[in-house]
Length: 361
Image 1 (cartoon, helix red, strand yellow):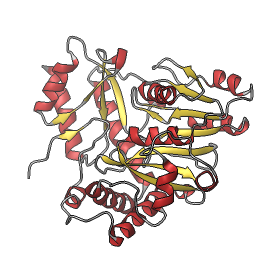
Image 2 (spheres, helix red, strand yellow; image 1 turned 90 degrees about the vertical axis):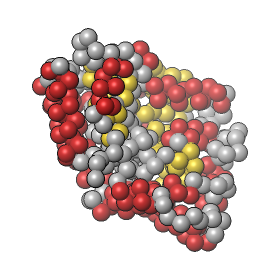
Image 3 (cartoon, one colour; image 1 turned 60 degrees about the vertical axis):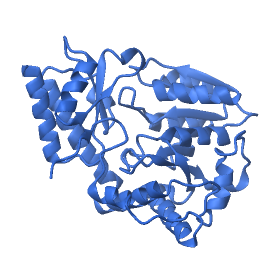
């Protein structure tokens, strides 16, 4: 059987056959006890992805994109009577700053160049003043493919007693996350990236003490994590979940465990991204960032001379691959290749051969 078009964009991903088949399960009412028990299985499986999260953190599941989970986290947990520091070096850090501004909550931002790491010197200087209650950052900034140094940022958060709220949308399920050492209060993630589910289900892992003893700062009904947390204790949701997306996520989580878990997935990603990077460099295509700065699931490259992104995208689409454009000021100078989802070795070899033919042409 012919392979489907291979998605090399940073989510949604090319599905495995077993996850795709899960979407065809019999229709089910979300208010039935059987479905509530099924959702409790999902939240338990989510908590097993990182064993270090099980002692303190609970998954709160929402229907929506990763951005929905991020905004629910910020809407519910960023205080109105505190001061939040946003550290940004890409589109998604900027988006979180915009969310907090739209919520009308007190915030400051340390905005870094998109091609540079977070300015931790500036962060520590600001935290040392003692009035920052929360720090907000992106773990894996897919704008460039940079894996931010959250270990160092988390150490500063612990030193200055500032709660860390983390966008882990494109890292959860692959990259390492230290739930005990980073002073994490919550992180937001989604089903349709490193977990290899489908769009429609996202979630926030939140400190249980915060959920049980705190009160929501949310000004919205749908994005109030506290309401979800209360009702999901029995497996039910306050609003209609994306039922078939839940079926797919459940199967994807089983598949992840069977392949060896988060560490094995990261190892597979590192192999794929390393082969892609090595092959394109050999063809004269330059990477945007040094390898040591990159995450495992997406790489950015400078566009080859005399070819535009639409041209490159079109040629690769003809060969059965979807790549991704740059964003903002990088839109005309880079392209991005993600390596999540059901990417098989023969897909990788076909991709490399396609690039070789394009460069020879």
